[in-house]
Image (cartoon, rainbow, N blue to C red):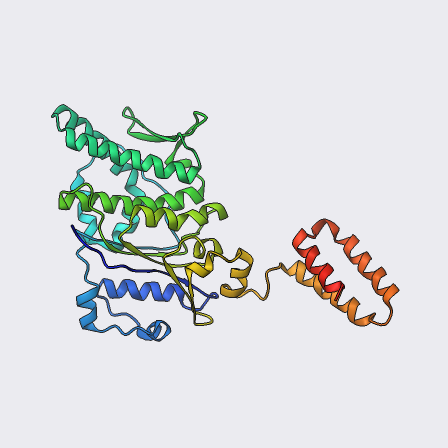
Length: 350
């Protein structure tokens, strides 16, 4: 049994232009043995050398997962006309950059191939392969169910036109071609890694093998609703327990979603444990790690400025001060949240 060393996932934050995406690109170059720009090394206080490239980053692609998923993830799924050879997918494992788009566009083709191969396995009384394929699709249904928040979700295969449907609790059937962009983006990440995992398990001949590896994701929150942003990393780290995820993000939901992570702010050069991040509100994280001056909107800032002006100009005229403050609050009452009202009342009572 393979014993994996403990590791921490790495989450990069910071303002636009702080170098998050640049770091991911350079890590990708190192892993693929392409000459990187070393300007980013000082930011992370890490020294890479040619020897280090060979010793630590030359992953065996047939036994380990590696992928670099960009924010512009393709959501278009190719139409399936007929089954294809498995070797077409196996050959992509060696080609990291080309494989990203290939797996994203052709994951429905891969699912069709697995279903067709399962039929032949049943005809040949190959119970092991039949059961392994069943397990594969059940796991996919479970993950899709979490994404769609549908506990009875099913994947339905129609052999007449080589089509897969996502069947929801209420009976509606969705094709992969008409999914909302957020779901498509997340499924693009999942299917890229699912396909790699399945191909690696076939290569090593072990359906329970959990490969180690490194996955880089630039802005995993792209196109996702805030509630789904919070589930991205928990789902991925559960499905791929031996893979280290290195992500660059603008989302407070992402950085507060898992425990075993180190958060590095490229703007402030501060390091935060995810154990600290999960206890903070999104508004606190937006201020501390994403460059906002405070937790409120520009409208709220303007409102606070008006209140401060009234307080300053009328500090010796309490009746006039109260009259003007009352007018401001009445004029903007429909826009003031309970949190804002509490802050405003605290400021007025100072």
